[in-house]
Length: 280
Image (cartoon, rainbow, N blue to C red; front, side, top):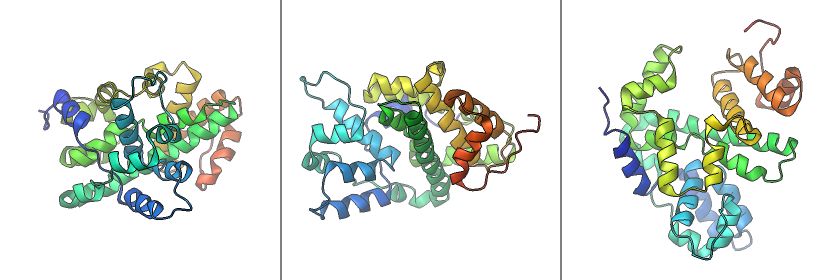
């Protein structure tokens, strides 16, 4: 039997609750605010770009408080900051609630939660790099979609650490199990469904919702996001993960490159040990 309040409960909670940010994000923003020489949208964007929750927190606030005169969707963080204004950003999107404080009584949940954040950040870097290679002039939209692709998982680690730890333990015990099946068993719903509902409730730009929707992977930009998320997730298990050769092949098809060259591109992430000649 599911151990949480179900999908509707969590949509209601996460749609309106104040969202926590990483302690490092809050610290960096406080330091930046005190430095008049660097206090501009560029440097604020650099800080927000590392934190998926802060990114979605800003976009959520802007969408839910947009002016009637705003006719275009705002996806990019720097653009959102320019529309909101620096003073309004600090006053209206504060960093009062910290992830680390929320998880003080469940400190064991912090490392796996931070691993998902790190994985999301890496995925966003891959997606941006590949978008640039594909001459996508709006590469920042693709980067943000990859960064936020697993935001529901990150938030559930913060708000429901016990069931998320149970999912983690089950998956560690039997790596052959599909994550979605375990989520359904423990939570009573899949995180993908929660994320889809939250994106609508938050009023996120439709473009961003589309880019985060794996079922639209026949579109090049969505395919970019999906593959970036996949390779970040699989490589987090080690560069000898059995799923990586297929990832390299699919990325090669996206970028029109041999799989071997894709491996060379990704080598910056440290020694990839994967023999593409082996059957898989």
